Image 1 (cartoon, rainbow, N blue to C red):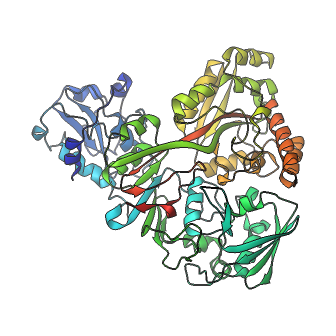
Image 2 (image 1 turned 180 degrees about the horizontal axis):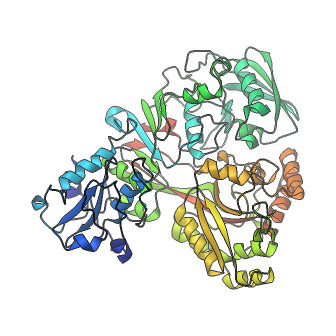
Image 3 (image 1 turned 135 degrees about the vertical axis):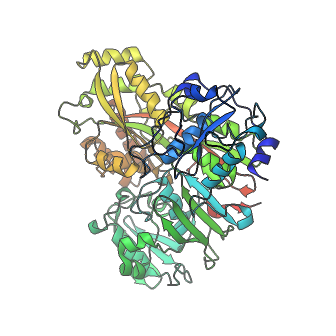
Length: 631
């Protein structure tokens, strides 16, 4: 079925779009192929039928107006402008002038108010056929976008970010975690349905004493290059990731490991620095095994370009800014607790703009995507060839406040009452229910409630109270508020809502929007007064992976409160579960009382995918494509 035929058969209904969407300027530059590109929608609304201009080198079309239609083409304009932003041929980036919430197919499938057969193909317009061809080009603009779907046994999944390095120890993005589970295996497997720990690369393990664990390894496992998996690989991996020269990004996931030693070809002893009760939880989630021989031959740089693992899928191509191609591993070990991979090929595509991802999903360039906005998810449910599912996740959103004042000598964030005012100024209920939607809930504590040790009653409750926020600012010496910056790398609309809350009490926060790695480095360098962050704890169901990551003296700990660090360390190392809980509670209580953070909400995730894909989402926000299959 062609795009036109699909739109005729399955027309969608859309609500009126806001007036300012129809009236805002489109910034014309040399990126427009048409010399007569309009400055205003009104200029072409009085002209004939449909007006569109093709964006030079962008393989997409920006609609400007449609005669007789009460809708503006906000979604498609946003899609195209965003995809061309910062292109090298531009003298300056095209400004994103239109609202991001407009549904991207509003001009594809909206019933047309006039006869499209009369539309010209001249200098000042394109017919719907030309538009369809241009949209189709979206799926041809990259080698990573072709041959999607069941017919080609290729699952194409798209996300908005890419890891800075495909090594799971050298990135801390969720996209990196997903790739890591496809390419590498862990010693232990946690069953996502019942939470039980099961043998994976290790067939058994024994706790020798409080700081020693012995592992018997699985024989007959091969890396993607054919090399056998042995104890040498485990010892190498564990000793490498704790060495300073490895420069791992995910220090918090391995800082409890002291060393590993070889007991035999398939036997390894793991030494812990101190007792660490959640060791198996970490080993089943965040400590994959690398090939010693190959890694030593190519180094980290070579390994990142051509990674090798034992996992169910092997990498065939990597292109920065585009994605990763993977093929099913025909030699994947038969006794894997997650079973054999069922889909022949999996391609990960990087598509930064949400509307572009949805356009690709509807036109066949993508089979699966996530982080779909609630209103867009509702619209997608009307499409019979797509499935939309949603559910709560363990990812939390929060603000980090510069309590030590490292971002500037006179930082207002040094004042407790200012940090408390920020907490009172934010409408958590509104964020959770109106923006995040789904099963999102307001959050007051610096952890995910489903993690061991996350005691929600330990938190001070900062209800939405702008008047109290203003009073606290006045008491802190800022009766007229102040100016600051808020850094972010995702969820721009959430951040803009927070900025609005802060502005209402006198805090004018300028948004600094960066890529994740750049923000992380500035945050760790103490240069950020306030940042919006999201954290999924690497799917680890223990408070050591949330509060422990951000407050225990790790690189991400900007607060460096010795009391909090001490309680968290005690909780991490105590063998008595109640002692662990008590110390986590003390730490969480002080974090909240001192308003080091402004916890906001837990995320609810909307997934959208083709109807012939079997896919099951889990609360740990880890899409398990190895468990997926075609119907």
